[in-house]
Length: 81
Length: 399
Image 1 (spheres, each protein chain N blue to C red):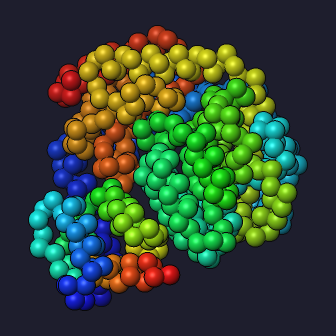
Image 2 (image 1 turned 90 degrees about the vertical axis):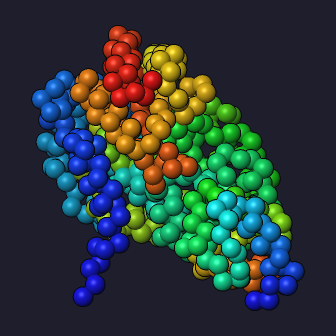
C-alpha cells in the first residue's frame, strides 16, 4: 500500500480522529493489537468510514480486516461496486 | 501440547484478584429456598429478590402450579423427543394457541428456551446474501443467531434511527433485509423508538423482528409489548418472546402473521434438533399466559413500583441507566467492577438480591447493579429496598 494513495489518505485521516493514544499509523498498523479500540469506538469509526465512502462494511467483512492498509483495500473495492 | 484453556487466563486472573479481596462470588449464589416471587433464603438469610425478571410474579400462582402438577401426573416428566417427532403433546399445541390468543396473531412456534428462539428464527430466515441490520446493544442470543447463520451482519448505534436508515439505504438492491430490534433493552431498561424504527425499516423494504422478552405482560394495552404500546405491532413481522420472565417458567417463542410461517418447523435447526419442553412446563406457561391477559391491576402496581424505586434511588444520589423509568428494569450504574462487586455484596448482607452485570454483557464497558421489579413487590418492600440501598451505598462509599 502506497501512503500517497488517495483512499488510504482519507481512511488514515479518519483513523487519526479516533487515535486518542497517538499510535503512529502506517498501512501496517493493526486495529486490534496496535490501536486497541473498544467496541463502541470501533462502531463509531466504521460508521465514519461508511459515511465517508457511502458503503456498508458488515461485521463479516470487518472480521477479515486486520490493518489500516487492508481496510483501504476493502474500501476501494466496495466504493467501486 | 498447547493448553486450549490458555485463552481464559486473563479472565481467570481478574476473577481471582476480585475474590482474593474476600468478596463473595457474585456469579455463584445459591438460593436455598424460595418462599415467593419476591423472597428467597440465600446463605440462610431471608433475601428480597430484585433481580429475577419475574415481572408479573406468576411463579407461585396457585392455578399455574396446579396446571403443572396435573400435567406431570397425566403426561409424565418429559417428552424425550423433538417437536417434529415424538415431542409434540396436546400441551404444546395448547400453549401455542394461548400465544396466538395473547398476541392476536396467526402463528406461534414454541422453542425450548428464549435463547433458542432467537438462535433459530434469525439464523433460519436470514440466509447467505441477506442482510441483518441490528442494534449494537442487542442481546447475546441475537448475536449468536447471526453467528449461526450466513447473512451479512450490519450493526448500528443504539436506538439511533438515522443510523438504521442510512444502513438500510446502502444495502444492495434486491438483497433480503431483516431488521432486529428489542422492545426493552435489558441492561439499562430503556425502550426503543419502535414507532420510528419500524416505519423506517418498512419504508426501505426490511422485515422486522422485535424481541419483546422484557416487556411481555405489562407494556402495551394488552401486555403485548413496546410495539403495541407505540402502535406499530401490525407492522412487526416477528415477535420473539420468552416464558422465563413474565410468564414465570422456561421456554421461548416466535409469533407472526407471515402466511408461510409454519414451514419454519421443518427448517429451523434449533427447533428440530432438540427435545421439546416437558409437559408440566408448557401447562404452566399456557395457564400463566391466559392469566396475563387479565392482569391490568397487577400491571398498574408494577409501574408504581418501578416509578417509586427509580425516584427513590435517584434521591439517594445513585446514577441510573435512564433519566425516567421506562420499564420494570432499573439499572444502577457503578463506577467500576470492584465497587460494583462490593456494593452487590453489601446489598446481599442487607438481605437484597440484585444482578451484577458487567462487560461484555453491558454496553460501553459499564458495571451495573440491575434491579428488576415484580408486580408482587409490596409498596412496603420497595421502601425496605430503598433503605438497604441507602445503607449499602453509604457503607461502600457509592453515595
